[in-house]
Image (tube, rainbow, N blue to C red):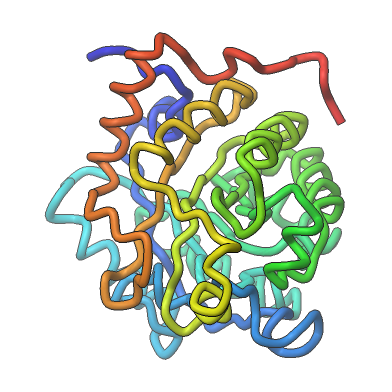
Length: 311
């Protein structure tokens, strides 16, 4: 098998565990401070949480039930594997500490669950919670996934994100210094961002102690404010073709710290919710195209990375 020209997160996990590892998504019934009025209302302009949750994820089911159903779903594919409980829907650190602790510990008590991954916002983390998770991380796998989405504060304001990039920097540094793994989410193709600005995200993220990165192409999803903006102001948007996005991702990777593992290049909203772009391509097919194009270009992650630039 040919060696990857980027750091593949799946291979990083394989190096940490003797078995195959599968994430199982959980909807723990959280909300978001950008929806309930604490930070804002309406949420981020691009967000429709229904666009990325599997069918077994409903908050009416307990954490244990969701995990057990997820394990049954994946077990027939791989008989011998372990699982990470992925608190995915909305802001999974937004609540009373005692309540959060109960949820995380319930997940960790399910057989064959070897760790937790917690999706959240950088403005919804506390020292108390980080100190607790640091203790858990001494025995189990713990990763916090921070939705950064952009390093450009103007963009963050435009998409009604409700936090600044500086808040993300603080949250990631505070998390990492406690020995907790950090992941970041970034959307490429947000309205009004130039190609140069999107490449600049790689340079900024490379300065941070991030373990892994999830990239998402901008998707216009039904039921969002952005879907309305797309109809009202199409000139604000450039929705990439598959080939354009492949080249953008590779250009991005060239500036990215080679120690940051890539967990995802693209996301896939359900077809019934997706307005544009409809690429009609599976995740594994896109990865194969990335691999082939990087080989053709004879390039690799971190080719243009400046290791002297740190925050």
